[in-house]
Amino acid sequence: MFSTAVRRAAQPKIPFDIYTNPYKATRLWPPDFSKIDRKHQFRLERKYKRRAKLKWARPRWTKFVKIAQMGSIVCMCRVVFRRGDWC
Image 1 (spheres, rainbow, N blue to C red):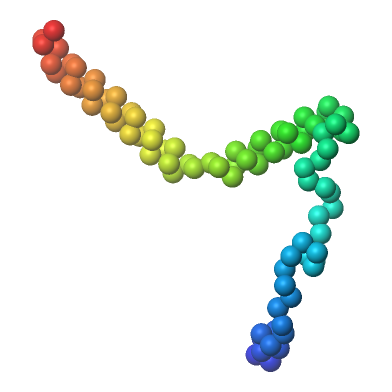
Image 2 (image 1 turned 60 degrees about the horizontal axis):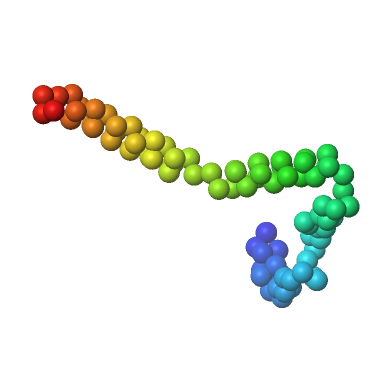
C-alpha cells in the first residue's frame, strides 16, 4: 500500500497545458452561432444562463439582505406608529 504511494510521489509531474491536457474537450466552445440553427442557439443560451445563475448564486447573502430589509421596514413602521402624533 505504501509502496504505491511512494512510487506515485516519485513520478515526475507532467506539465499541464492545453497541448498536454489528457481531458480534451469534445466540442469547440463557444460555438459559432452563425452556423447553428436558432433552436440549438436558444438551448445553449438557456443552459449557459442556468449555469451562470447557479455559479453566482449567494443564498446566505440573499437571506441576510432580505432579513435586514424586513427588519428595517418593521423598525420604521414601529417608529411611525409610536410617534403618530408628531405630524
